[in-house]
Length: 229
Length: 112
Image (cartoon, rainbow over all chains, first blue to last red):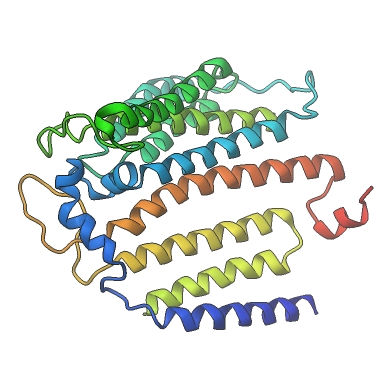
């Protein structure tokens, strides 16, 4: 009965979505604004990566909201796991072997460097703050899996996260004062396209997002690992 | 068009898991499948025939680029999906700690 009902629900959803999907052309322009971004995105924002110019240039306010959603989810996770977590029931974990331990310690700075490269070059190459932050968090995940017993300090992770958010909002607010522009306007010199120091505030904001996302996801991993031990 | 139908099938697989399964972990996996189906659909709508990735390069002049807007939306949606999944898993862990089971039918009976 349960399966029958769920199949009926699925059929309704499938018909509803399917009728809409048949109207959407595949492989053609579906939005008018996409063509505008491609044509003038490079001149408007100075970023060679058009996806970055949309994320941190045209739709930066939207990105601020999404970063806030991420922050709220991370805080909620911490709150859910912190309530009623009995201290002192942590069991002793078996230490990792020397090869695993040394390998993880060797790889950790390299992964951090790779993540930093990804978010520093977000306006030039594929990548950006979100992807680089995820790579940075994966380095911490490696340490948690390989060198068990090692922990990040919560103070540092919270401080990094807060600093990243503050830089994002602060740079955006400066845009209000600089030359009478709007929130998150690109007021720094754009420079030459395809150079590292170009695109105004976009690389700075992406680096801030990278630190923030990396610290948040590392905190999420820390909370989950702490709970499961 | 076949790509859209594939996304819809994937979405329905996820919804089926959410509606019919009773294990919380399977429900969470179903939500993740639906979420990824939506992301895939967004990327599919961005595609243009013969389009290249929307990144300008100093050496080559790319003419036909895919739509960058859905890429930008999905980019953040993936990271947020990761955080919300972690939140769901944390809530499931708390429920398992309190009731000793992941079965939502049993959790409903044990209420109180």
